[in-house]
Image (cartoon, rainbow, N blue to C red):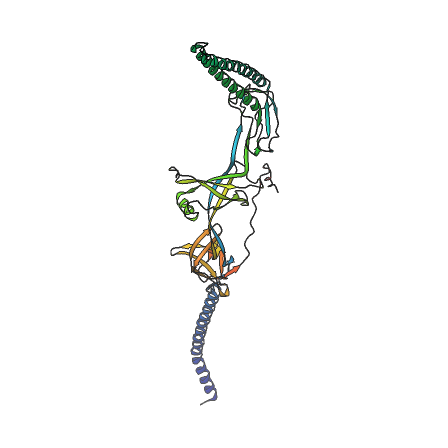
Length: 426
C-alpha cells in the first residue's frame, strides 16, 4: 500500500476515535461535578450541624445553703407561767378633811415619801378650840351641880333615917343626882367630840408611802364631804400610795390555776414571782405570790392573783403594766436547743442536724417544755450536736450547708418626737 494511503487511514482512525474520548471525558466530568456537589453539601451540613447543634447543658453543682446553727446544750430550765399584770399600791389612802373649815397649810412636798403620823395639812382650829372650851365650861358647871346634889342627898339620907323629913324628898333628891350624873356624862361626850374635832384639824398620814400631786391649795374651804369652795365634786387633799411593798395583780387561766395550786400545796407555800419590763424585758424585781382569788371569772375563765414585791429600788409604780413570770419548778440537766431550731412536719417536730461534710439530716425529736426562746428536747438529740436555727426553708435532707453567723439584733428605733425612756433609779 502506498505510504500516503497508510497515513490517511491512520488519520481517519484517529478522527473516528475522537468523539468517544470526548464523551468519556464529559462523563468523567459529570461524575466529578456530582461528587464535588455532594462533598460540598456534606461540608455545609457538617458546618451547619456544628454551628446550630447545642450541646446538652451540664448539670450544675448545687450551691451550699447559708444557715445559722447552734449547739445542743445541757442546762437547768425553769418551768414557768407568764401573764400580763399591773402594779398597784399595796395600800392606797385618799386623804380627806374630817372637819369643815379653811385649809390653813399643806405641810408635805409632792412626790416625796411620808411617814406614819406625819403632818400633811392643817385646818383652821379656832372654831373647834372655842367649841372645846365651851364644852369644858359646861362640863365643869354640871360637875359642880352634881357635887351639890350629892351633898344634899347625903344630908337627906341622914334625916330620913331620923324620920325628920318625908321619904319623898329623899327620893326626889336621889333622882336629881342621877339626872345630874347623866348631864355630866353628856358633857364629857361633848368635850370628847370637841377634842376629836380639834385633833382632826391636824391632818396626818395614816400610812407610810409616797405622796402624790396635791389636789387642793391652802385657803380653800374644805368640808367633811371632801368638797372645796368653787368645786362640785368630792376633792381630797392628796393620795398616799404605799409602794414599799407593792402589789402586782394578774390573771391566769383556770388550768394554770390548778397547776399553781398543786405546786404551792394549795397556795400555802410561797411561789417565786418575777416582774419583767414590757419594753426591755429586764427584771423589775422578784416577789412572792400572796393571794389567789376564791372564784373563776365566768366571762374570761381566769383567776385573779396578787403577788407582793418589796420594791426596794422603786422600780415598780402603781398603774404600771408588766409581764409576770411564775416559776413552778426547775428541770435539772435538761437537753435544750433554741426554739427557732424546732420545725413541725407531718410526722411531728424535727430538727435539721449538721453532720459530716457539712450536710444536714432531718432528725425527729420529742419536746418537753418550751419557755420563750428555749425548747427542752426529751429524745432525738445528743449534747454537742449542731442544729440549724435559721435557713431551714431552703433545706432538704442531704443538703449541703454553709454556716454563717446569725444577724445581729437591731434595736428598735425611737421616734424623733418621743423622749428617750426614763432611766431606772440606781
